[in-house]
Image 1 (tube, one colour):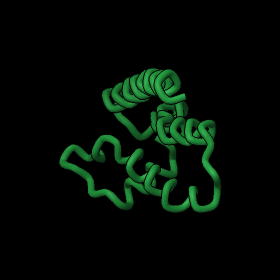
Image 2 (tube, one colour; image 1 turned 90 degrees about the vertical axis):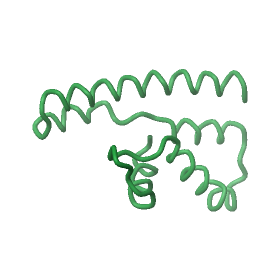
Image 3 (tube, helix red, strand yellow; image 1 turned 120 degrees about the horizontal axis):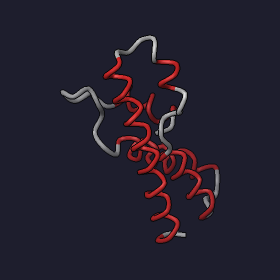
Image 4 (tube, helix red, strand yellow; image 1 turned 30 degrees about the vertical axis):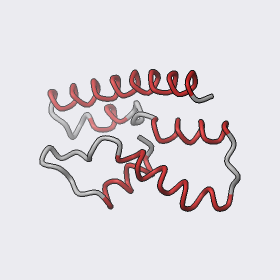
Length: 103
């Protein structure tokens, strides 16, 4: 998830009991802002739609575990690393499906 949509999700959406936001909240907020604001000023092409989809789908920065290592316990750091790797794999599969089915 891009940093902008993650920050907006933290502000606008209440946290669940697990401390995470509902799945797809980045897509909901990201595409809502795109249709309400960006499309009013920019004519969307298939390439720009694909670029925006990729922006919203991107995983967290891979340097986050390095920066967070001093603040997290070993188990939390392992979970963070695995989450980022799984999100990166999911992003590749998701964008491949998008490219094959939409573009």
